[in-house]
Length: 115
Length: 112
Image (cartoon, rainbow over the protein chains, first blue to last red):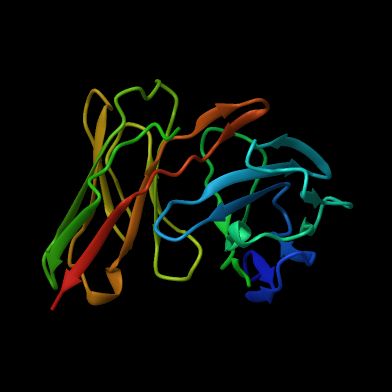
């Protein structure tokens, strides 16, 4: 296993278009997280899944955003009707089941530019 | 909000030890302190974590004070490739479990 994979690495889209990103977590990790990072800021939590269940969504996740993890493996993050303020790095991370002694493994991210 | 505070930036001479401080005064007894770093345009990379004992691995050492209210990440011989933003993280409770909340981190510049 080569870690957390995200696709695409870069995406340029016109305002108003829909975009979808994919994340493939480490195979034995049943928790998957999405973060967003804007320039000069630390990553901000968006949502997370345990297996296929979406357990929490940040208030940052407007109704234009939707995330799925249909079979508890890969996940997709879709942004509808993109706006320039959606331009950011979208990071995915995975971890094993909750305990007090685990870390997250992050992917390299998808950089979205809305023009 | 993040449960940690860090200086926004630090410089370190190449080959010298880089000591990055972090305050986490509200940490509870069973919470670990995690350190990650992020090199430009990459995802955060795990460095080390600890509970109350000092920890060392091939990347760094972590010194946690006895009262656990602060810690220091030590890169013993900093290289130019260690230039990055370093995040000290204590997980915060969410509805189901806990979550990593990132602050702005410390931007470390290793100078030749």
